[in-house]
Image (cartoon, rainbow, N blue to C red; front, side):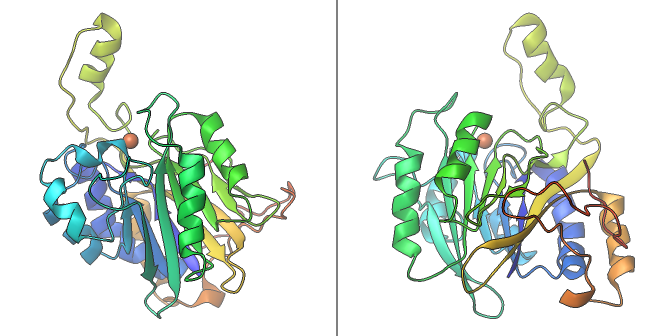
Amino acid sequence: MRILFIGDIVGKPGRELLRKGLRRLVDHYGVEFVIANVENAAAGFGITKDIGDTIVEWGVDVMTSGNHIWDKKEVLEYIPGEPRLLRPANYPAGVPGRGSYVAQSGDGRAVGVINVMGRVFMLNIDDPFQIVLREIEAMRNRTKIIVVDFHAEATSEKIAMGWHLDGKATLVVGTHTHVQTADERILPNGTAYLTDAGMTGPHDSIIGMEREPSLARFLNGMPSRFEPATGNPRLNGVIVDADDKTGRAVAVRRISYSEQELLDLQAGAAANLLTHTRVPALTLREPQGHPEHRRGASEPGGRVEG
Ligand code: FE2
């Protein structure tokens, strides 16, 4: 099972990248299941039903979120009826929506997705470390493949979650900082890990917002109104290959594409749509974190940052 996780989609620039690029990415890499963090998809703040429905239509199977999930009031009506839109599972009991979902890939294989949120420099909600184990236990007999989106600020808390779940999840990927980290690896017991998937949105910005008002807040300490930026949109994310029988990750690779690079993918992949044997090889990592890898060495169409 090849899974694509797309980092935080920010506003229209992020959505446009998804619209233009997702199908090409899926075809190019032979992706079989798509997850995306959508908490900033509606003008940088929250998600609406219209936008969520459109994102699903474009090919995202499950949507995750975080602290911005409640920014648009209408989500309170939307989230109870849309099991494919997750909010962090460690919100207190009684909060609308759900924090996990077992979905099906196109050919009927089960994929579990869990969303939890960190507490360091963030809202002091329920313990994500305990709740995530409970959620994994609850879906364990339905699926071996489990992806955890840990929406958190602190690198230390995210790395701790990676080790906490090593051998219990297929992929633990961080979101929220909007800056992609370069530490993808497969931990000793088979869990792929990346501290942050990065942002699908405008990169000539301050984590997605127009530079001037964001900078002004640091310069003069006064409140300013944040607007989503537009410049230099890039799609960031991570692809993981999972062993269907064990749920262990066997390969992990992070991606970062501009719109043009996504458009170029289509041409390069025209002859090998969804053919696993002919898509670019993923980086294979020894469980011990063997330093030898081939990332970026011989890809016909893909460009990998970092
Ligand atoms: Fe966030």
